[in-house]
Image (cartoon, rainbow, N blue to C red; front, side, top):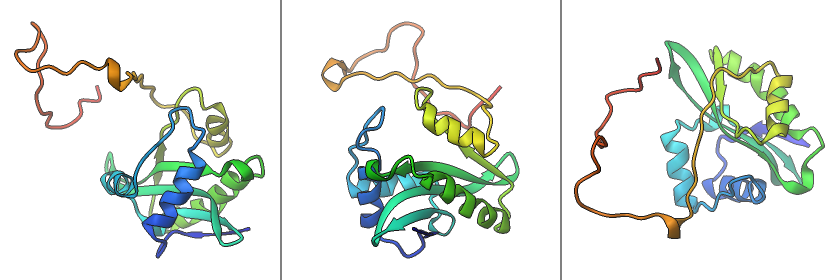
Length: 170
């Protein structure tokens, strides 16, 4: 098993690995190559600070990291960690983290943010093993597309849609 950065890896190869790793996820991702590329760009994807485990020339596990500033500190943001179903329970995600954390530190990253869906206890356990802790929780709602009612016209009393200048975390 070889672990290396995703620098010079095509979006098509990353998409193939992403699709395979998340095929049985809590909320399956059915992204096209273009949608994944847009999502990664929006999240500050940095291929040099993202890593993959290879077996037989194929990506079997990965951590896709974005990079930027958060609260004045150089920050990596885990935009997705996944392992192909056939390679799970082999410590691949742990090995990727073990290989990537020193590289992140060498690039001046002083904090690492990630998100986990609460029911994904295996991922949460992995992150705790590496010293991560829960700092905040979010709720999310899902609605089947055919149950979503889109309408035009005035909004109900007390509801408005407006752009936000920035998040008000307080």
